[in-house]
Length: 85
Image 1 (tube, rainbow, N blue to C red):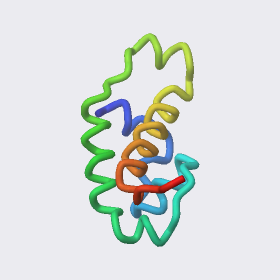
Image 2: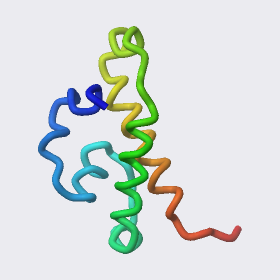
Image 3: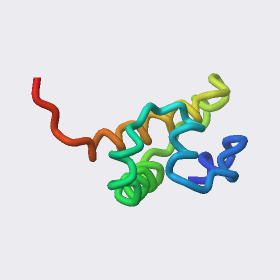
Protein backbone atom coordinates (compact mmCIF):
# COMPACT_ATOMS: atom_id res chain seq x y z
CA UNK A 1 0.00 0.00 0.00
CA UNK A 2 3.05 2.21 -0.02
CA UNK A 3 2.08 3.44 -3.50
CA UNK A 4 -1.11 4.94 -2.08
CA UNK A 5 0.68 7.02 0.54
CA UNK A 6 2.99 8.42 -2.14
CA UNK A 7 0.08 10.24 -3.78
CA UNK A 8 0.67 13.94 -2.97
CA UNK A 9 -1.96 15.22 -0.53
CA UNK A 10 -3.38 11.86 0.51
CA UNK A 11 -1.82 12.08 3.98
CA UNK A 12 -3.94 15.16 4.72
CA UNK A 13 -7.30 13.39 4.22
CA UNK A 14 -9.11 12.96 7.51
CA UNK A 15 -12.81 12.43 6.74
CA UNK A 16 -14.78 10.25 4.37
CA UNK A 17 -15.96 13.37 2.57
CA UNK A 18 -12.37 14.56 2.12
CA UNK A 19 -11.48 11.28 0.36
CA UNK A 20 -14.41 11.67 -2.02
CA UNK A 21 -13.58 15.30 -2.75
CA UNK A 22 -9.85 14.61 -3.20
CA UNK A 23 -10.48 11.78 -5.66
CA UNK A 24 -13.36 13.63 -7.37
CA UNK A 25 -15.83 10.83 -6.70
CA UNK A 26 -19.46 12.00 -6.75
CA UNK A 27 -21.43 10.96 -3.67
CA UNK A 28 -24.69 11.55 -1.88
CA UNK A 29 -23.93 13.01 1.58
CA UNK A 30 -27.00 11.32 3.08
CA UNK A 31 -25.96 7.90 1.79
CA UNK A 32 -22.32 8.38 2.79
CA UNK A 33 -23.35 9.44 6.30
CA UNK A 34 -24.90 6.00 6.85
CA UNK A 35 -22.19 3.88 5.24
CA UNK A 36 -18.92 5.81 5.50
CA UNK A 37 -17.17 3.30 7.77
CA UNK A 38 -18.01 0.23 5.68
CA UNK A 39 -17.08 2.11 2.49
CA UNK A 40 -13.73 3.22 3.88
CA UNK A 41 -13.05 -0.28 5.24
CA UNK A 42 -13.75 -1.81 1.85
CA UNK A 43 -11.65 0.91 0.17
CA UNK A 44 -8.75 0.03 2.45
CA UNK A 45 -9.11 -3.68 1.61
CA UNK A 46 -9.19 -2.92 -2.11
CA UNK A 47 -6.08 -0.74 -1.77
CA UNK A 48 -4.23 -3.61 -0.10
CA UNK A 49 -5.33 -6.09 -2.77
CA UNK A 50 -4.48 -3.92 -5.78
CA UNK A 51 -0.79 -3.33 -6.18
CA UNK A 52 -0.09 -1.37 -9.35
CA UNK A 53 2.79 -2.44 -11.56
CA UNK A 54 5.82 -0.25 -11.15
CA UNK A 55 6.21 0.39 -14.88
CA UNK A 56 2.57 1.51 -15.06
CA UNK A 57 3.26 4.15 -12.42
CA UNK A 58 6.27 5.42 -14.37
CA UNK A 59 4.37 5.65 -17.67
CA UNK A 60 1.37 7.53 -16.31
CA UNK A 61 2.14 9.94 -13.45
CA UNK A 62 -1.52 10.03 -12.33
CA UNK A 63 -1.89 6.24 -12.39
CA UNK A 64 -1.89 5.81 -8.59
CA UNK A 65 -4.50 8.57 -8.19
CA UNK A 66 -6.64 7.07 -10.95
CA UNK A 67 -6.43 3.59 -9.44
CA UNK A 68 -7.32 4.88 -5.96
CA UNK A 69 -10.23 6.85 -7.45
CA UNK A 70 -11.58 3.73 -9.18
CA UNK A 71 -11.26 1.66 -5.98
CA UNK A 72 -13.03 4.30 -3.89
CA UNK A 73 -15.82 4.53 -6.47
CA UNK A 74 -16.24 0.73 -6.48
CA UNK A 75 -16.29 0.64 -2.68
CA UNK A 76 -18.96 3.35 -2.53
CA UNK A 77 -21.10 1.76 -5.25
CA UNK A 78 -21.07 -1.50 -3.34
CA UNK A 79 -23.05 0.22 -0.56
CA UNK A 80 -25.46 2.24 -2.67
CA UNK A 81 -29.11 1.30 -2.26
CA UNK A 82 -30.49 -0.82 -5.07
CA UNK A 83 -32.02 1.35 -7.76
CA UNK A 84 -34.97 0.16 -9.74
CA UNK A 85 -35.32 1.32 -13.36
